Image (cartoon, rainbow, N blue to C red; front, side):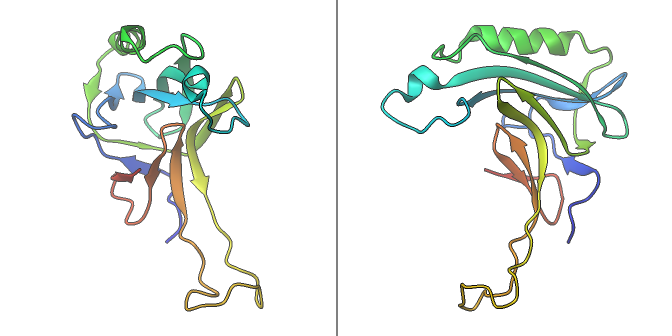
Length: 164
């Protein structure tokens, strides 16, 4: 099954999609998430390189991305109350906010070299005669949509639930 043009995301209170819903101008997805700078390889100094972000993505009623607010206190700073306060402040500014399910289109924003967005991950089937073999030879990996940098994967049956 192909990736749908508009991908449903289910609101789950107490989980990673708890801060999603609708407001007077459309839909929103807010989160606190961590990422590493591009090219960083995990090592003993990983805490010094991890960056926490408060994120608010906004979408029209049709699911098109209309803007994002992305803020970080900087590398090596722990996830503290400032991130929650920033996100909650943005949410407080959305008129008519109601938490609930959303349906959005893939989009991508890059901040400081870090990818944010809901990205369609499409995989081509192996070329005829390609090396590999085994029972799965010739079968392609299923397509999905990945929310970055949160690492939430949405896939068939496209019911709004995610995998991590």
